[in-house]
Each structure stands twice: as C-alpha cells, then as structure tokens.
Amino acid sequence: MTLTEKILARASGKPWVRPGDNVWVNVDVLMTHDVCGPGTIGVFKREFGKNAKVWDRKKVVIIPDHYIFTADAMSNRNVDILREFANEQGIEYFYDVIDDPKGQWRFDAAKGNGQRQFGNRYSGVCHSSLAQKGHNRPGEVLFGTDSHTCQSGAFNQFATGIGNTDAGFILGTGKLLIKVPETMRFFFEGALPLGVMGKDVILHLIGEIGFDGATYRAMQFEGPGVSTLSMDDRMTITNMAIEAGGKNGIFTCDQKTLDYVNARVAANGTKSAFEPVEPDADQQCIYDKTFDLSQLEPTVACHPDPGQRKLAKELGHITLDRAYIGSCTGGKTSDFLAFAEVVRGKTVKIDTFGVPSTTEVLNELKATQWDGQSVWDILAAAGVRLTENPGCAACLGGPVDTFGRMNTPLKCISATNRNFPGRMGHKESQVFLASPYTVAASALTGKITDPREFLC
Amino acid sequence: MAHTITSKVFVVADNIDTDQIIPAQYLALVPTIPEEYEKLGSYALAGLPDDQYPIKFVPEGQTKTPYGIIIAGRNFGCGSSREHAPIALGAAGVEAVVAESFARIFFRNSVATGELYPFDAPQRLCDIVKTGDEATLDLDHDTLTVRGKTYQLKPLGDVRPVIDAGGLFNYARKSGMIASGE
Image (tube, rainbow over all chains, first blue to last red; front, side):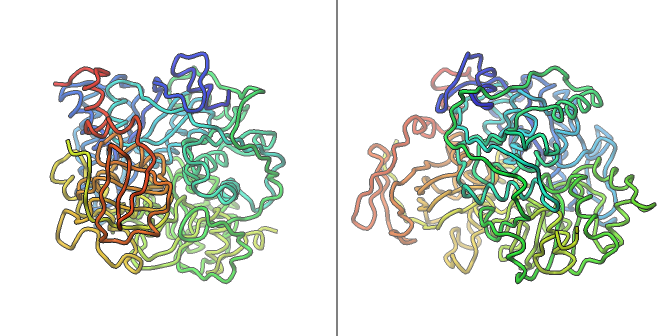
C-alpha cells in the first residue's frame, strides 16, 4: 500500500484498502476557521440539535485567521460565533483573537491594520498554526474546512479540505465516508541549489502534470531528496497539492519530521502518541516519476492559474505594480528570512507588502538579529510595508479594507498559492506566483527577476 | 419529483474557480442563516471577468438567475473548499452543472449539500451550446437535449439519490445510516 492507503486502512479498521474503495474513517483532528466555521456550526446544530455536543472536544481545533483585521461587521461577528461555540462545547484548542472568553471581537479601524490588535491566544493562519501548536502528527487523519488543509501532509499524515456539510457531519459523528484516492509518486533525488525553494519545486510539479493533473489523487513525495528538504519546504510543497487538484499531498517520515512534531507536541501539551507510516515496496502508483532537485530553477506560475509554468529568467519583460509575501504557503519565518536575504540593504521599487503567517513568525522576525538589526527592521528599512497582524490577509482578497488587497487592476508577484482571476481582490488584477526569493528580487527591480542575480 | 429539468443555459469556459463562482469578499455570509443564504445567491458567478462574460448571470438587483443549468468546460469549481460555491449557485436557482470535468471538492460539496446535480459530459458542450439556449436535462436517462440534439452524459450513479434527498444528512436519515435529530 501507499502512504495514503495505509493511513486510510488504519483509520477505517481494515487490513488493507484499494483506490476506489469507499471507507468510513475515524477522524483524529477536525480544523475549522472563521470563514467556514460559522456555517459548519450551523449545519451541526441544524442536523444534530441545538443541544448537541461535538464527538470529541479535544479533536476539534478552531483557528480564526481569514477575515480578522477588517472593520467588516459580519466578519467580526463570525469570530464571535466561533467563541460562543468554543465556550459552549468546552473546546480547548480555540486560538481566539481576544483574551476575554466573554468578549466580542471588534477591529479598531482607527488604529489601522499595521499595528498589533490581538490577544495572547491568537495564532494566525490555520495550516501554519496546526503545525506550530502541535496538532500535526504522522499517521493521523486530519480534515479541515479549507482547501489548503493538504499542507499537513508534510507531516506524514492524511489531510484534506472539506465543505461545511461534511465538517458538520464530523462534528457530530467523528467519522467521514471517503473514497481512497489513487497515488501519484514523486521521487526526489539531489538537493535544492542556491536560490531555489520548496515553492519552486511545487510550481515545477504542477506545471509538469497540469493544474488539474492530480484531481481525485494523492501526491506522494519520497526518495533520498526528501531528507534534504526542511519541514518548511515540505509544508510549502504539500500546501499546493490542491493547486494540481490533488485530494492530498503526503511526505514520508524521517528524523526531521519526528524532531519537529515531538518538539511541538511537548511545547503545547497536545497528544504525543503517533505511529508514522512507510510505503510498501510493492505499492501501486498510477504515476511514478523521478525529479532531480538539483536541476530545478526559480519558477513562476503566470496569471491566471497555478499551472502556467515559466522560469523566472524567461519573464524579465513582465513589469509589476506590487509584490506580496505572506500566507500559509509563503509567510513562514524561513520565507521571510529568504526574502530579507535579498532585499537587505536595498530598497524595493514597487509597493511591497509583508504579512507574517502566525504570531510565532512575527515574534521570530522581531527577535532574529542580523548584525545588530532585527529582520523585521531590515525589511521595514528596505521599504516593505509590514503588518503586525498575522493572518490570511490579501492572499484571498477578503473584505475591501484587507491589508495588501488589490482594489485596482494591478499586476502582483506573490509568495501565496493561487492566482485565478480576482483571487487577491480586483477582478482584472493579475497574480504571478513565485518563491519568496523571486518575489524579493522582483520587488527590487519592478520586473519578474531571477533571484540568483542577487544571491551570488 | 420531476425527473427532467428544462431551463435556459449559461455557458462558461474552463477552470471556473471558486473565486469566480463566489468572490472571497462575500464569504462572511453564513450559508445556514436563511437571509444570508439568499444573499449568496445574488453574488453567484459575480467573479467572472466582465469582458469575457458581458451577460450577467444574476441580473443587477436580483437574487435569482434566469439560467437553471450551467454548461462548463474542464475543471469546474477548482480552488477553495468553500461550500459557499455550490450554495451560491443553488441559492440563485441553479439546478445542475454539466461540465467536461469537475474539481473534487466542488463535486463533493454539491452532493453533500444537495444544492445541484453535477454531471460530467463526455463532449465539450461549452463549445457547442450558447448562453440563453433552452435545454432539457433528463435525470433518469442522463441526457441533455439542446439545439435539437441529445447528448449522453456520464450517469450520476450513487450520488443521484443523495442529491434527490436534499443532501448528505437527509439521505443518511432516510436510509437509516444516522438517527433523526431533534
């Protein structure tokens, strides 16, 4: 069996499963956020009754992150709906925006959206938070009401995005009926060269198979190249499995996985027992191809979909209005450090926005010193407009007052994950997806630029 | 229950993603709150680029569309897992989408909510049919008749009774898989 088949067999209590089998799986973690949580809660109450209790309050993780730092009253209300539900159900893993469990979240527009407006429990983008707060564990089954839930597959677990109705069903029963996907195997050899990141790997792969090339399938990443990739790079890769249509993306487990997970579950007091899976020697894959990581180059997905693959060095003729770094895909500490490496001591030429994925990223950027200056200050000195409020921000447009949102038809290079028409705001705007290195180099020149020019 | 759906069709091309079906700025609307459900319908397909789609899917100031069937190309519903997408279409009055192919989560959400019938068409109907054409979808025979020609669609199989019942929960109750709620 493949990694995905092994996990689904275990979760459904069967000795084995095959692609196409429909199986009821027991769910280890259900994650929801402020955009889909209120609707999920609505389905749960409608179907199981007003006084119903969730199947296991320790397995439900609620992470407001999408539309938080906005004056939009409905968005603020949605965070209050989550709080009320968390209180009523005794849900411990609720990363609230404010500290007062009886309070109401109201964004203060007068303060602006750059200055910190959150309490001590807030974390930020759900997928990054799941990892940092010790909710990702090898061998488990995790569902989330967000398509980038597949990011958690970096930790050798089955993780996929679902809708409110399925999530409401899980809240009541702890189970879900799913079809076992076929597995596509991506075998990594070599190590990434200078200037190339996990983002380039996944943009290369999506370009290779097409952006619906993994529809209904599992993308499995294995081979000796895996151990050369950091957990952050692995998260970037699995995060975008959905951009190839994939049901899930999943990595094999190694010492780096175990070290990360053990440290996080210990620090947060979450469940520490888990059992990783390994692929069988006779696993059956519908696609099997080897990729030499050392041969990859800085890669860009052009407007209007993640499958429009080009090399950064081929796109020097494309002028830009804006650069953006942030989100689950491109707002991790390592992403900002790569970005800072390029822009340090220089000045960006176009409007450039930076949104840390989580409060932990924010704190690390402020604490990390390079020659006596924090990385945060280095970025600000280079002209990057930063917000202290971590979250999804303009990655998906959001309400019109969202930090970094494109409210006019601009051309933007972005470290985020999706570039369909209107994704980051205005319907006629265009988004080019690239690594933090490439976004940084392009911010300096105002054109799409191969970052290796700045890294030699 | 009617086993055929006759309606004007609205035709879209490939890769209509969830941001075009329901732009992210409207996601603060909660689908289980009835007035917000209606509102979602008024924004259905509001993200389509105006230059490529000069005809509005939902006329200005209205919550319902005159088009009960959508004809689409490849990979309809790609992108986000937002259930707001099939719900916005269903709330606007869409009963079925006939596409060359669907993205996985959109297909599943259509079935789970029972909002619409997602039919796979072996032919690329979006190149043949025009917005405003009158079509008849026969659910029992899995066919679409339009412009005087009948096209065989891929049978819905096991998902048909789930949508007929009005979604996953109704189906599960009806078939005894879960107990009745309050």
